[in-house]
Image (tube, rainbow, N blue to C red):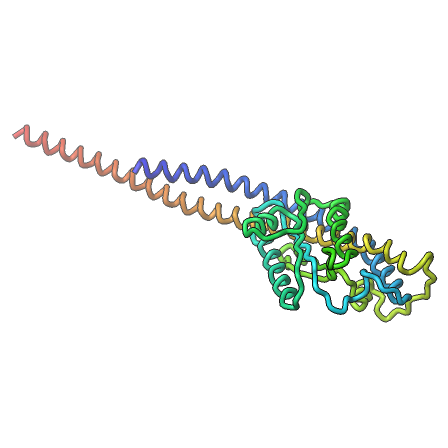
Length: 305
């Protein structure tokens, strides 16, 4: 019984130490969610005004541009998948990967070749383990992205959309990320960044139903769109990175809270087992003492006779 009791105590100490770690990680993730939400809110006005500018140029000119013009028979598409650099976040990365897999199957079903760009070590490890080709990848900033990181990601994508498909370019640019809805809800979503749908742009910019003013573009509408293209892609990627970062922290907080609660339940269960083992040990010791005393009494009574 003594050995069993020591095993229970050792397990309780180990789980208690783990519980302290998961509780600390839960509190850290909770504090980072607030910062990530503020960054998302701060990025929205710039993205909205940028979309309004693109909408104004596209609707006010007949210029054909990669930003707004659909390819008649698209044959190649690029997907940007945003995952996390670290684990312990529940199904956050795996859900985004599954969303990207569904999008890839849909695009291939439409007869398009797919180039995959990955942000985050988890997505890179998933594709590397399966020996799948990755066009480019970026790691090290998913939990706290900066605008400079979005520019790094956007660079190769802008180059690909501006290059002819015969030379390795793409006709469409899609992004897969995790949308932050609330502390308890984060949804993996996918969307097409380029070519930009004017109907979606009008709705996104909040100009639906408005009569846009007429503009004269200098030096030309095409040059204006050339200048807006990288800014638009960068802002969309930056917003997706911020949404994903907030979702990652929320998923990690939820996972660590569940781990902390499970550790507490396990400690209670082991404590009950340890108490039962201690009680059994005490009962056995009392029985041995009583048995020994009874044997001595019988021996003494036999000698008196």
